Image (tube, rainbow over all chains, first blue to last red; front, side):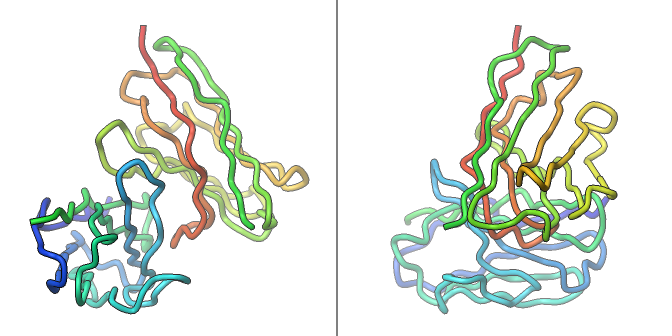
Length: 107
Length: 116
């Protein structure tokens, strides 16, 4: 099983700041890496897939990067609506696995 | 508009069974892998099972192997999860999602609570 580790678990940020979230895989996941956003009480929403491709409706301030086992989700200027939990997911091998999530909270 | 609507959740005793259903509208599931993802209260996301477009390939997480068969009826545009031998640790919100990966469409989820 590919273990996905996200860091940090919680990030306290002020609106307007640049945010970098990390996701590490226990082995290479090729390009099959996605990011999801989940706001309290809401359904998760796909933000990015294939490491860096924004899903339909994802604002340009969200970008994904990385390769192999190290991946990053960057929010260039945090907006109030971006406070949420972010999950990475690999789909290079079964079982599909998610990271534990990073909660982005207001500082 | 694409909609995935889950049903069938509820309170069940340990060892009991439930059958979850997911009715899709606004898109034809026969073209897609379909997946169940669950989220225990206050916890993260966990992949449960996936099925390929024609139903010939089915995969699931080890913790539900042999207990939660996934199935689909493309004619009814529906996805199912038969949940048997339920355990307390199966308590979660179960989401029906599109795709094998990059899950673009999610249902609102159906809550399964396993408790005596």
